[in-house]
Length: 280
Ligand SMILES: C[S@@+](CC[C@H](N)C(=O)[O-])C[C@H]1O[C@@H](n2cnc3c(N)ncnc32)[C@H](O)[C@@H]1O
Image (cartoon, rainbow, N blue to C red):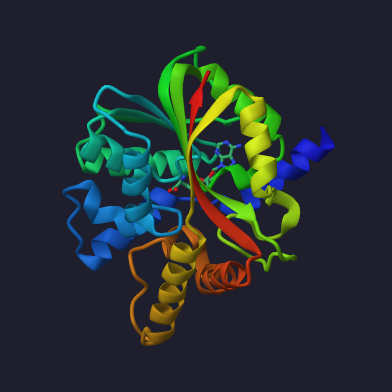
């Protein structure tokens, strides 16, 4: 129980952003930014490496269709969920443990008129408030690394998927070198960082009753992308107003985390992969 409380405290300390919706709407107003479509918030709400490109690529690999009913685990501010609904025509439910992320996700979804097809709930992916066999596709981008109990995670995913349903993910793995440099975007220290090696992750998912249909290494693309992010940050004039982007969520450690992730990737301390698996 004590261990569970320590974990939840660390997770909260790392991700919590009180008044996030107000911070976002104030920043949008100050920048005079009109929000008419899901594209207008992509810099702010795609909380993973390579942003919108990665979301579109994974959706194509997973063969997403308008008939799919999708569950987005650890949906953050809901950018990927809105993109899947707007560009692939499906219905999406997003869950996240952080209530203020869900509040912001609801606000942004209302703004772009997607609330009929995209809904959000505060919930833990280890104990999901959904009936058995409710979804055609479970989606996850950069969330497995915060979950220690992978056996329970994949059992829960298997439970909520229909037979033949797909699990599509874009996840960070441990690399050949240690340690990981902290802080990174998903953890301030090792207490909420639970990266698995490729063979460990494969064993866990296969053991839960899934068959692999696609596996793709994305580390080199992510390393190039992050190096670009770091270079652009370095060139920003010191007196420029902060961009309306992920820095609103990540906070004052945005640049340090970007540098660390770029270095972790280039030194093979972490890896990034796409995976698509089918539930038996
Ligand atoms: C790096 S962010 C990725 C957000 C989103 N998937 C995206 O790509 O834009 C990781 C997210 O996982 C959420 N998370 C971590 N542990 C969780 C859990 N046990 N259940 C639900 N959400 C969780 C965090 O609150 C955070 O929003």
